[in-house]
Length: 156
Image (cartoon, rainbow, N blue to C red; front, side):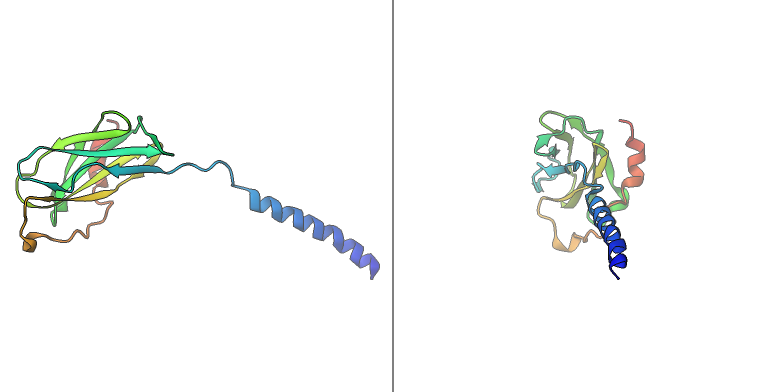
């Protein structure tokens, strides 16, 4: 019986060593999340030029080298007719583009942002003028719906 216990002890030690290695594998340096924050007001007037703007950061530092920031803009209930507006880097991780909205309504802008091998697509509402609530259609479109339009902008 003692011989059997001595044979089992090394196996227990080997098993304990192996489990410690398994737990520590894959715990290398963590990649900091890229963040996209809107700077654009949520209210605008019809036919008024507005600046679509986001600030892109990673680990609380401005991302000055985003591969691409393109704003997808559409009126509520009409995502199929969205417009893609490429943004320009200005400074301090800020990417901007200008647009205007011809008529009152609820609009959406989605900032398709590719930076540091990540693609983010945050969305914001913009109320233009004082739209009739009956004219507003809720947006239940898939956030990835505009990705097919992004192919036209890759490499810019």
